[in-house]
Length: 77
Image 1 (cartoon, one colour):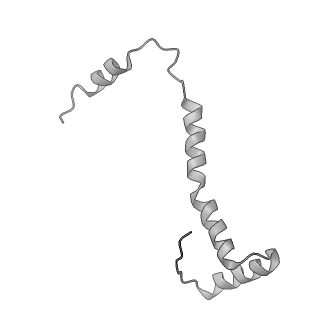
Image 2 (tube, rainbow, N blue to C red):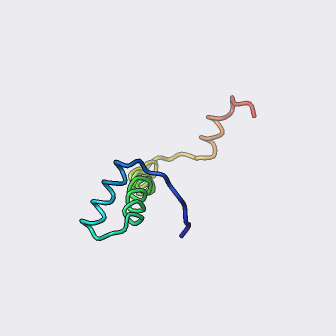
Image 3 (cartoon, rainbow, N blue to C red):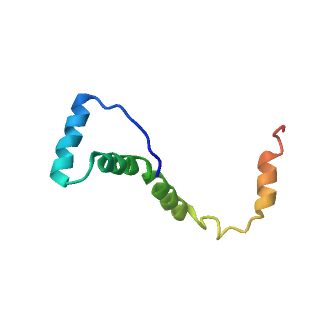
C-alpha cells in the first residue's frame, strides 16, 4: 500500500468524521473505499462488454486477415 496526503475542505471532513463514527471505520478506510468504488468499476464494465460481444462473428465465414487488409488498404502509414 502507498501512503499519500490529501487536503479536504471542512465540509467533506465533517461528513467523513460522522461516517467514521457511525461505521466504526477510519477516515482513511472510507476514502479508500470511495476511490475503489469510483475507479474500479471500469474493469468490471469492460469485462461485461467484452463477454457480450465475444464470438459475435463466430457464425460468419470470413477471413479476418483479408477483411482487415481490405479495410486498411487505402490508409497511408
